[in-house]
Image (cartoon, rainbow, N blue to C red; front, side, top):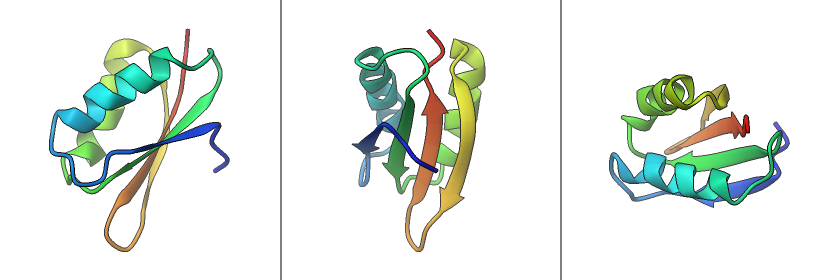
Length: 76
């Protein structure tokens, strides 16, 4: 998936990857896609739940060898 920006949250534990995602999305324009790199297992369930709660669009998670790539489209 082609992202407009990437956030490196590798090595950070819950809830820090989600907090950093929120901050980064606030810097982006509506409709832009953020790729988040994270290796915390909780990220897999936290990101879609956070998107549902905030109205941002969850676009999916890809599993790499030792980390995840999560994709979010800023809603507003």
